Every structure is written in C-alpha cells, then in structure tokens.
Picture: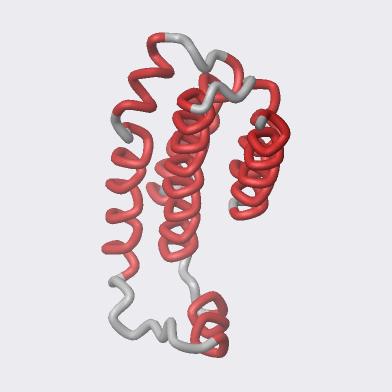
Length: 143
C-alpha cells in the first residue's frame, strides 16, 4: 500500500466515524464539541494539502471551463484524486455540522434531518436542498 493509499484510507475511514455522532448522538457532549469547532475539516485540510503538494499543486489547472475541469480529471494522479476527495469530505462534513447546529437552534426534531444529513454525506448539495425544503416546510406549517 502506498503512502497516498494509506492516508486516503485513514482520512476516508475517520470521516465516516465523525459522521456517526452527527447522525446517531446529536446531543452527546462529544458531538457538541465537534459542532463547536471544525475538527474534522481542519484535520482533513492537512491531508488535502499533503495530496495537493504531492501532486505539484494546481498552478496549471483551468477552472474556468468545463473542458478545463475534464482535462484536470483526465490527467489526475492518485494524489490529485485524493485531494479532490478530501475537498468533498471536508466541505460536506462542514455543511452537515451547520445543518445540525441550525436544526438544534430551530428545535427541528432530529429524525427530520437524518435523511438530509445522509444525503449531504453521500450527495452533497442534494442534502442541503432537502434540509432547506424539510425545515422551511416544517417552519411554514408551524406558523
């Protein structure tokens, strides 16, 4: 197993474990600590930076067109792919934490946000969309 594969596996497994308290124990003191400070995204940032620097960075990347993005993926090294994945993991988790904090602040029942949290974990923006639809619909009916 290469260093890249090992670090990828560690980060990928760790973030799965970090999602569990958000889903299963939202009021646990450990979960509250995870919500108060972005520990998981902070740690993933180091993995991201390692992979990015191992690949040589993104100096030649063209993010201004779909063709540029396709070229970036077509020529991706394992380190570049791992960096891209760390980017998704960190931001999806950050959004999941925000959703849980927001739901708790608005007294939204936790069961109502489990599906949006799972979708955020697996489908990113779909989870955000569902969270907004579920919570706004619920708040509208409460009035």
